[in-house]
Length: 229
Image 1: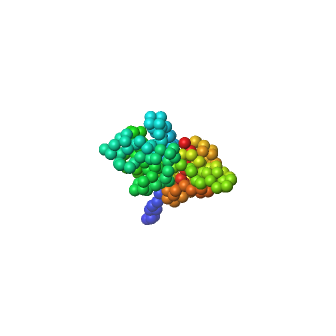
Image 2: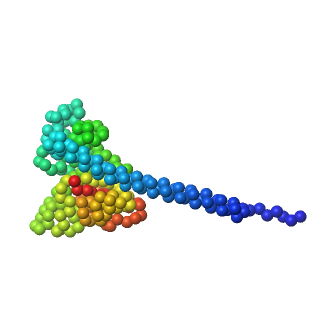
Image 3: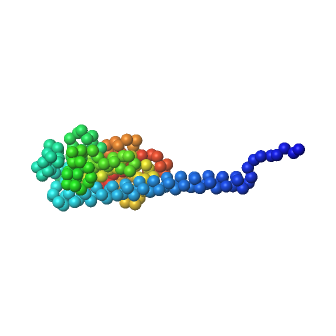
């Protein structure tokens, strides 16, 4: 009697390959949708905070965080004591200031929350979290000037003005997301324009000459990007 051979037919192999292809396509499409969602959310974050900032400025004629009348306006039932700014027109402190540290960049979020312009309790100075798990914060690009070097941060060299005014920063964004946000809102380059970036593993404070390197497309290298108001 002849031995009966077992195995897969060409049709069965073809069906398996089609199923694998569909699964891989679904995974890749899902990853692309996640990336696009993060890009959209990062842009919305910038737009939303900017709108809240200008709404506060228009309503109270003061900068959120720097507002010297914040405590008297809302009282300690809403805003913790000693949470007013000094009213000098500059928001002091780094964008990633610790919530336990008294700084106007932390008061910024408390004042916006007290005014009902962003969600959350005004008792907390914690920065909002972006869609990539990083933080969203503000600071003034007020690096000291010396000689012919102008004040500013995220500068390419000593003669570059960098970002000198108030800016909003979003940390921990994958390079692909950061590059897309920069391209849609500015010029897509880390070291020029109104959006500048630095590659960092953690939300480091933004400092002078910390700009770059260029965006890559690995989807994994984290960047902090800052946009001038």
